[in-house]
Length: 214
Image (tube, rainbow, N blue to C red; front, side, top):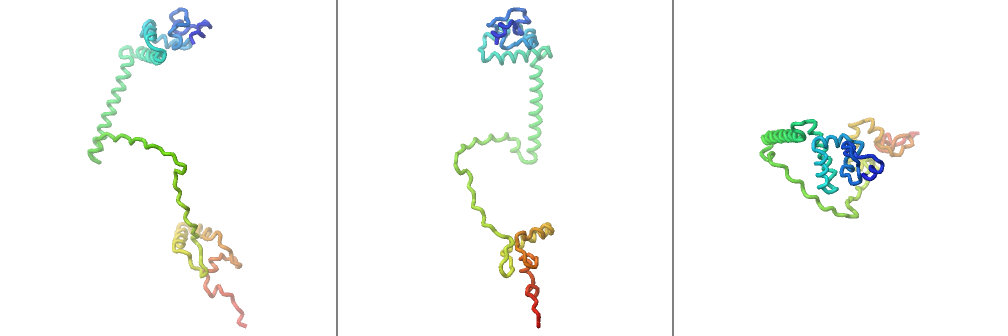
């Protein structure tokens, strides 16, 4: 990055503010680009360019980026609050944390009066993760239950089971219209237009054909 800046005659923000030539060995070039001069201005005003260069030279390349971010944050906080700087923000957060811990202690103490002293104890640690086993058939499926016709009738017109009557009566109580429409959706029709179950439930006098006495 520094070589491209030096070849295009675009010095980094540090060299531009200090009005010096930016070389390929410039330690500021990778961290203070020319499009953000305010960042180096804050750091230079609070810490000084020579001190920052000395600090960066003592660190390896993997630590320099984090160091520059920390210096920029501390410098901006110092300019906003010349008395406390970033220590003021840390103090505010610590005070807020202490308040929350006090409120939590009072809440646990009040809860202990209702459910017992164990409410004051710290929560148990989470259980260790269980080892996962691989299986081609992870789920055991039960065989499907045999098909039961709730409205199957025998030849004499009786119901197949007591549960079918209970299910139909329950449906009729909840929705008489729905029970009437869907009671026997697949029942074959009688030649007279009546469902097969209604024909079976007719009285013997009604089901027998009328014969001419003559």
